[in-house]
Image (cartoon, rainbow, N blue to C red):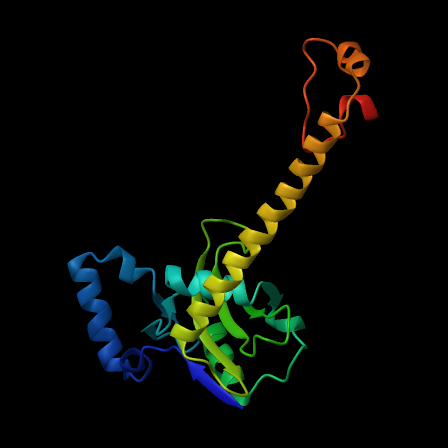
Length: 202
């Protein structure tokens, strides 16, 4: 089993003294964004969060390839490797995340579940999503995953439009086959709606 984690190594390995100095400079410089990533440990020491928000590309890729979201507490599709559990434990200990989630696949083609942390409700468009780790028998390069996600999304668009096209073709065929008396009975203001049966079918 292969594991990739996404900590900022320099911040993760920062001794308490270095964290204190960094936090002092953040305060001095008025860096509110960085301040939001400062956490108080159970020991009372303040440290900096070593995890980063997902990029827009990562959210797209993992959102397309791993669309099933599970709270970490109930996830059971595959055994979670020890290293990923350690990352989850550390992230939880920071006390800044609302949820730890696993994003997982819908089909066997995708092999890499992803551990993420949310700040904000998972249903909210304003939530912040932090990438913590991913694991699998073989971890595909991100460039490969990006191509797969684009191809999958393109295929979804094509299938959706083909479905609409088949509905339109069926409606056109039915309209062409209508009798003159049916058209007159429907009235001058009659219209067709792809989402509903034609007026004459009601």
